[in-house]
Image (cartoon, rainbow, N blue to C red; front, top):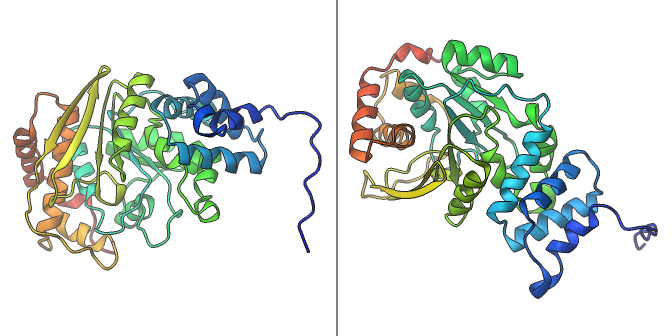
Length: 341
């Protein structure tokens, strides 16, 4: 039996012009302006669009590929609609984590611990569950006994006490989180997986982001410049997470005060590294506590910490940042991660 026909619509829906801008064909289609993108996504977050319109909007953007102005406008809309509003300040570094680990263990968590040991307050935000078979940060941090918050008050307390806190996107921007979970329905990741990394809810002066597709790095940096982000770093990390791959040269895209620059983080390993069967936290805990040696894990940790230090301390080059990361590693407090329960 054929599906029932859609009910006739007497007047054009207020969201229809945004879909039309994106879908007028090869010669008529254009990108949204910053203001248009902000207005369009604000309507989405307020549930003022039909499901059919949302699907069309997201997939047209995916086919066209987002512009820096569009990404910045979407981020601005999310910041406008955050519930409740995040308290400005409180963090030195914004760390986004939306991909989940697939090929290696989450060594970046040890890099974050080194940064907090150096005196930096790191706020982590992310989402999990949208791609099967991956280990997400909230799950890994919970298993390691690291601070995971359920509201902004806990975030502030954890940053004060531990210089580290994670809060799920589901808590502070549930509408965006719900859209991110549509991947199994749409069959593709949508633009929300891109711009969620730029939300920086606490308005930290430094922001670090990872991308999976190299072409998106320049878009991230452009959006950060439009948004007035003081300093940011974008690179292609392992599985799309903020983790330097020691077996590859990594292109670092930075911007400070709107001025763009680039650097190459040279590889520490020449040989290919096989993926693990299943990412988990046990090797991460054991390496930090000195209970086991893991050459790849230590290199990934130090390299990731060094890349972040290059953002936080502009005078450092790779050599100097790695030296500082090694100093922090040698002085680490192994009790920061408790024994396996």
